Amino acid sequence: MATALGVSVSTISRALSNHPSISDATKKRVTKLAKELNYHPNHMAAGLRKGRSNMLGVLVPHIDGHFFTMVVKGIETVATKAGFNILICQSNEDVAHERKNIETLINAQVEGIMVSLARTTRDFKHFDKAAKRDLPLVFFDRILEGRDVNAVVLDDREGAYQSTMHLLAQGCRRIAHFAGPQHLNIYKNRRQGYLDALREHDVPFDEALVFTCDMRLEDGIQGMEQLLKLPQRPDAVFSASDFSAVGALQVLKKRGLRVPQDVALTGFSNEMFTSFTEPMLTTVDQRCEQMGQAAARLLLEILGEKRQDVSPRRVLLQPDLLVRASSLRLR
Image (cartoon, rainbow, N blue to C red; front, side, top):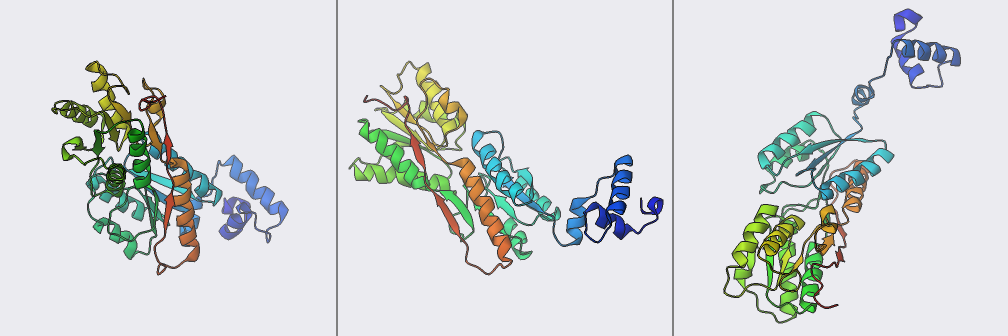
């Protein structure tokens, strides 16, 4: 293009970026030829030459549910407004895949990474590579306990506490709990909220009523079948996930048990399908889009400071209990 117009490459570059040092006549000639040649400047390459990619990495366990989809939407809204694009990776709940994702994002020269951990992640070693490159990390939703990191999390303990207190207010006393892997903050805190509510009502804790699993629909099926084999079945289930709660609902319907009259049910996350179950599922809204926005704002704030020696910050969002028919025994 430069040869055809008889100008330098730098003149072409400045003309395409509307630099004031280039005359309007030259800009028009360059723009006209660029259209004829279907030429598009490589903004990413230009950014990298300046030491910037204008790319932010996002690593999530999966993208097939409502929660992470809406978190990514929130991230993208804030990032786009700030002039950044996002590169999304999925770990598919596999720590080995998560390690590869981190390598991919580092090699793509993103300027920062937002992460929600895979279910099987138990250490932080693969994230140290990013830290050694002064690449800022912000964790959201799922983090590892015992690490002081930049994070945006929900008050999961409070959400579980509200859900269990609601079941107790409905007259339930044998409240079972579907608990997730306890090395992850969200499931550990949800179990604690369940225990706190029982203690406050002087309801004895029964270990037989806790079923620890991976929070999938099939886990809910297995857990409910196991609970129904007890000499005295539970009169309610607080599940730390909507997916396992729906698995439990399927079993109860198959056995001819009424929800909520025989067994009340509550879930966690406010997945879209919870509004379409019969009965509709009581759940805890995690403010997913707000979480994504908060994570992006925190990362941009860290990038704006251009220093890595500041103390890690944590943003705590408040949950919202959505009471629906699956738990309303008293009307």
